[in-house]
Every structure is written in C-alpha cells, then in structure tokens.
Image 1 (cartoon, rainbow, N blue to C red):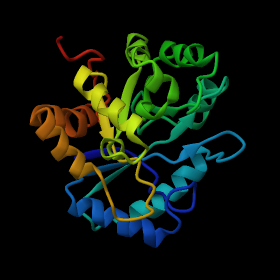
Image 2 (spheres, rainbow, N blue to C red; image 1 turned 60 degrees about the vertical axis):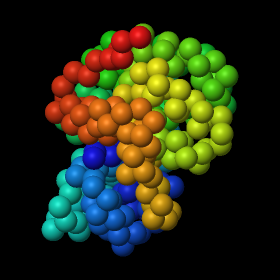
Image 3 (cartoon, rainbow, N blue to C red; image 1 turned 180 degrees about the vertical axis):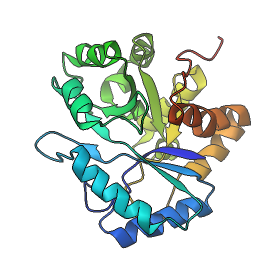
Image 4 (cartoon, helix red, strand yellow; image 1 turned 120 degrees about the horizontal axis):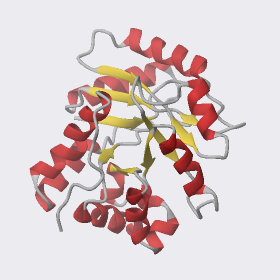
Length: 241
C-alpha cells in the first residue's frame, strides 16, 4: 500500500512530536504493508507556515533516520487553501515530489465563497489538486452531490481510512462509504498524525475488499497512488453507473 496523506515529519505541525516518534511510526507502517509514505505536513498561512526549506530539512532528517527500513518516503504538503495558494505552491514547491499533484484542504464547517475560483486557478496552472478528507466537510455531508461537483472541476478526492470506522462521526462514516460506492473517491489514506499505533489503512483495505471488492481496495490504496507518484494521469470518472 501507498499512504499519500501523513503528518509523520517530526515537530513541524500537529503530527509527530519527535524524531523518535516518527521513526517508530515508519517502522510500524512498513510492518503493516506500506511501501511508500508521502509526508504531507500542514501549510496554514501564518499558523503552520511550513516553507519548502523547513519541510525539506525535516524530510531529509527522517529519510536519513529510516534509510535501512524497507520503505520509501516522498515529500509533499497539505495546503490550506486561500487566495494566495497558487503563488505559494509554485514558489515553495508544495506539490507532491516532482509531480503536478498537490494535496489541499479547506474549512470544515463551510466552504469559502471563492473556493472553486482558487481551485480553478490551480487546475489552470496545470496542477492536479487532491482534496483531503471530503467526507468530513459539512457542506458535502449535507449535500452529497457536491463531491461530484468537485470531480467535474478536475479535483481528485481522498477519503480518510479512519472515516470508514467512525473516527470522525457517523455522518462522515456514512459519507465515506457512499463516496466509494459512487466512485467519488480516488484515494484512501491514513491522515496519520502519529498519536498512537491504531493505524487504519490495512483495516480499511480489508473492509473495502469485503464491502465492495479487492479491485477497488487496490485501486484506492495502491494503483492510483502509484500513478500519482509517477505523475501519470488518473481518470477522474472511473466507475460506470
């Protein structure tokens, strides 16, 4: 499996609190079948203002510490969207590795009025935005068709593995399963904040395999993430109704 959303870099956001914690998590994830980890610390302007230089320093520190582990790290970021996001992503190289893909998030309780304009600017600049944990956003929970609206705008959707087990509440859980059922999910990832060893991605693979099929589980945790890391195109609409 490939985990495209983690907060495993140490002492950089609300994720891992130490290098030792990060090393333990990497080893644990490797034992649970993860081959690649995308390190996506928060970028929230004037709060967690993680520039490329800061992220790169922490990334190299962790990469060196786990070089003997059978796992590969990739540098990225989770960008909280605002009107200056395009310029920031370009200047700070906050995209994932050398790809055009970039993990983004927005306000949980309501969408900014200019959200689609911001995303349009990213797509127009040839970026491929991946919206993190859409099943947790109240506007999508209240109006499920909004998820497909993002897809029509060339936005990919990444469901949190923990949502499938009710970590963020019953409504998010129901929305997560519905998104997979409708083909409105392109990735499932952990959003691992390194606070314990209840790592949900392997269990999510099993539940998706059992409730849907193994093809879908592989698609969301291995096939699409591998294509992303190679900067290959991933079909936005992949499920025939």
